[in-house]
Each structure stands twice: as structure tokens, then as C-alpha cells.
Image (cartoon, rainbow, N blue to C red; front, top):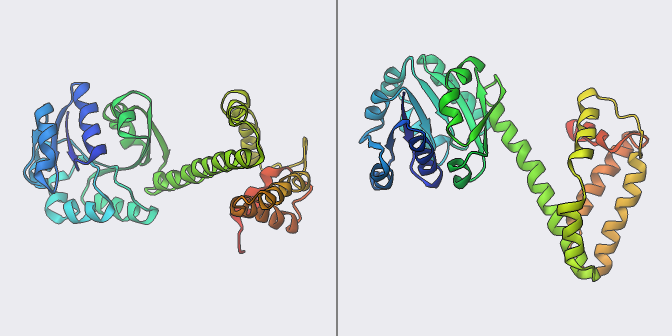
Length: 289
């Protein structure tokens, strides 16, 4: 099995290192050839053109700056003919629509296609704990599993639709960065109100079990049953309203809690106040309808 890595930025180089460490033959190509030299010194072969790399590989993995760079570099008639019967694993940042366009190009040229999103950093790829989510045909995912498993050790298939990995990526970002913003905002409240930061950090990082309530709310969303068993959205909204009030008293930016409070108020206005807080998903899903 021979793999071409197209793109030699920080992440592309990490992909090379991970494959070489597992004894997989690797070629590298980059629009600026000088960026390939470190990978070549580590044991990779140099492809002077994308067509040369496509000719020698069984699987091409792209890790370029964006989808436009992928289309400009390889989505051509010549490269399509060379890759026919082979596989393209697309790991550059794409939108759902861009992934669909690339998948259509691959299908038209008889190229197996997977679109992926790396949920980690270059150092994670070199280790064994990085998750990369993929979308596309499940059969293609299984055919390439040995290669995909070499890249951080934790490949996940999240859907047959070409853009599913991109959508999952954005969902993860929404959850992750909203959580981080809340964590930082809570620290700002503690600093302004004289609460010892170590007390806050200890509670948030070692005491409170986030997975427990998250799993319970996931079950509610999965089943669509938001019948209140612990606390209604009305109760949550009343408690949360105090956050913005304290922020204004202490001179803390209240835009984040204001946004959450507004979402709760909207859900209550839609008649969801007597249900569990997980019913907020209905408001987000049907916003503006």
C-alpha cells in the first residue's frame, strides 16, 4: 500500500510521520516543493507533480489549505483518469457543499471518496488518541481502515452523505467552543466576585461529572421525550437569569449569558417551559420557522 500526502503544512507533515512510523510507504507533494524536504529526509518519497504522486499511490490523502486548493490542484480530468479505481481521502477544511462537489467529481471519475475532519492537533495525529471523522460510502471506509487507523488510531464513520463529516465538525465546534466560552466566562465571574479561582477550577475539572447529565439529555433528544423529571425549563431559566444580573452588577460582559437566556425565553414563548431543558434543541432546530 502506497499513500500520497498532498499538502505539507503542520498537519500534513504529522500525517506523514504517523504513516511512516507504522511502516507505510509514503510520497509527498506540495505546491511549494521546499516544504516537502523535511518529510523526504524522514523517509518519504518526493512527487514533483500531483499527477506523478497520483500515478504511484493507491490512496491519495489531501491536507491542503482549503477546498479551493484541492479543486485547483487535483480535481482535473487528467488526475481523475490517473486515480480511477483508487481512493481519495480529503482532509482539508471543507463546507458541506464543497464536500459534495468533490464527491461528485470523484464519482464521475471512478474514484473512491471519503471526506474527513481531524478532531485534534498534529501532536495528536502522531500519537494514538486522535479521532478523525469520515463520511462517504461505508464500504470505502472499511477498505481503507488500515490506513485511516494509522492516523491517530481512532477513525469514525459518521454518515454516507459526503458532507456529513463537515457537518459533524461544525457541530463539535459549536459544543466545544461554547463550552470553553462558558468556562472562561465563569472564571471572569469568580475573579470579579472574589471567589477563589482554585475552588472554581477544582469543581469544574475534577468534581463535576459532565458526562452524566450529557448522557441523560442525549437520551431525551434521541427519543424526543422531554417530559420534565428533574426540573423544567422555566426553573432553569429563572436560575440562569441571575447570571446576567450579577454580570451587570460587577461590570462583566454579559453577552454570553444574555444569548443563552434569550434562547431559553424563546423556547418558553413556544410553550416548552414545562419540559426539560433539553427541549431547547427544538428551538434551535426550528429557529425562524
